Length: 122
Length: 122
DNA sequence: ACTTATGTGTAGCTTATACTACACATTATT
DNA sequence: AATAATGTGTAGTATAAGCTACACATAAGT
Image (cartoon, rainbow over all chains, first blue to last red; front, side, top):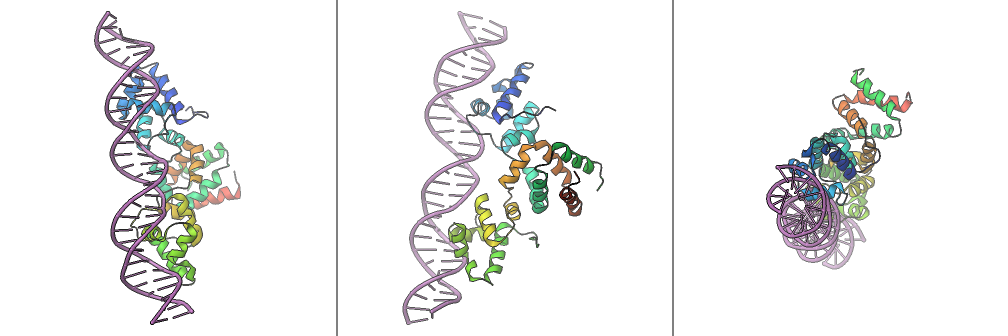
C-alpha cells in the first residue's frame, strides 16, 4: 500500500491516472471523467490544481474509478468523509479527546491500538 | 459534565442561554449576540432552528460565551473542528480505520483506550 | 489523409452558505 | 408614564462551492 508522499489532490489523481493509462487506454482524462460523471474540463482543472478539490461524492467516485483509497483522497481535499464525521459527532467528547491524544503518537503506536481493538481485547 | 440528551443545536443553545440568563441578565439573546459578534435576529433564528447551524467560527464563539464544549456544539452542527480534521487528514488511513473500529464500542471501552494513552503506556 | 480522441482555455452558471439590516410588538426598568 | 431592553418577522445580500458548456489545438489511430 503506497502512500502519496507529500503531494496534493490534483497531482495524486493525475499521476495515478497516467500510471493506469499507460497500461489501459480507458484511463484517458475524458473517459475517466465520463465514468465519474463530470466534465473533462473539470477533471483537467482538478488535476492541474486550477480548481480546488471537488465535493466528497465526486472525490469518492474518482477514488473508485482509479482504485484509490477514498479516505486518503478525501484527506488530500482536506475533508473527512461524512461517514466518519457522523461517528465522531455521535460521541464528540470521547473522540475529540482521543484524536488529540493520538496526534503526536508515532504510527506504530497508533497501529498497536488498532490491532488491540481488532483482536477484541475490549 | 452534563451532556445534552438528544437535542439539536438550537435547543441546546437556547436552553443553556436561558439557564445562564436566569442567574445573569447579561445572557439575553441580544447581549450574547453582541459579544459573539452576530446579529440578534440571526441568533434568534439559530436558537429556534429556523436557520441551520452557523459556521465553525461562530459556533465556537457561541460555545465560549456560553461556557460550552466547542466539540460538542460543533457536533450538533454536524461538524468536526478544523483542528481535528487536520489531525485526521495527516494520517487518514490510520485514523479512519481506528474510528470505524471504535464506532460500536461502548463508551467505557473507548475511555479505557484514552486512559491508556494518557498514562503513556506507548 | 482523414477521422477520432485527447487535453485545455475561456466563460459562464446554479445552489448553498452564512449571514445583515430594518421594523415591530412585547416586556422590563426607572 | 416614559424609556429602554428584549425577542422576532420579513426581506434581503455577499461570497463561496461545485460545477457545466463551447470552442480549439494537438496527437493518435485507421
